[in-house]
Length: 154
Image (cartoon, rainbow, N blue to C red; front, side, top):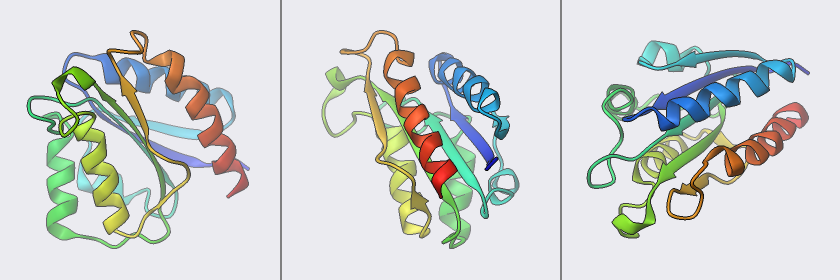
């Protein structure tokens, strides 16, 4: 069954954006209807609350959400729309050398907020450590394949 998937990207230096673009190519190739949001708004996100959302976020500064994704995070946090029908996934990019409390903080915060909004994760969040995986796609693509299988089954 074809799923409608919104891919919401938080990127500072383009790494998360590159991962998201590969993910979109894969999902489209698998027959899903996919849209990529590089400057996502609350309205964009709410358009998927009956469908699937995939958040691909790098981490900036002290474990923060990148500037292009932060307005969406703040808007969701402020308006707090409960979304029990939303199914989602999070790919969090980080670097463990910055410390455990900051590691993958951008994606981790988004994952926690979506859980509070009663959205349902299809699978566990993927935390990609730049110290271990120089090429994030090596771990992101197998994860996405599994995530997409869950989407098909749901």
